[in-house]
Amino acid sequence: MNNAEFYDPQEVRIIVNGFDLTGFTDGDKIKIEPVTKEAFKSHAGVDGDTSFSKVHDNRHAITVNLKHGSPSNALLDGLLKSGANVAVSIMNNSEGKYIGGGSYGRISERPGVTFGGETGKREWKIIVADYIGTDMAS
Image (cartoon, rainbow, N blue to C red; front, side, top):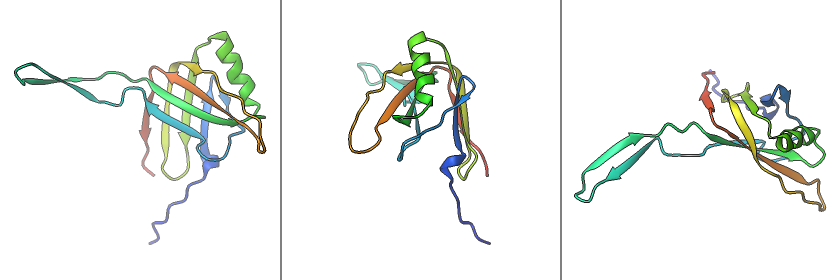
């Protein structure tokens, strides 16, 4: 039996307010990171007694890298300027299946714009307050 894995980046989708984003740059397409990485925080008293508290912070920062000419830039720019709530869904239907998302987010950073010998990129950052994601069994 062959246990070879096959990953196809075209099977990874990010949907923002019902729109499928398109026009990604090479390299990282989407990056998802928890804002608070600790699952538990420790507290130590002056005598060394220690306690732990669970962290209930589901905020995640999602970074999306689009080409300068991507039509999705206009959508994200409009959401940023309006201050609108952003709902995000991320799905990987390829090897390493994953699903995640949240309904309460904001575009948190304006992207820079570069012009050079190659097509420029725009890096968008979205903070989603109620993000939940999970790896799915193949």
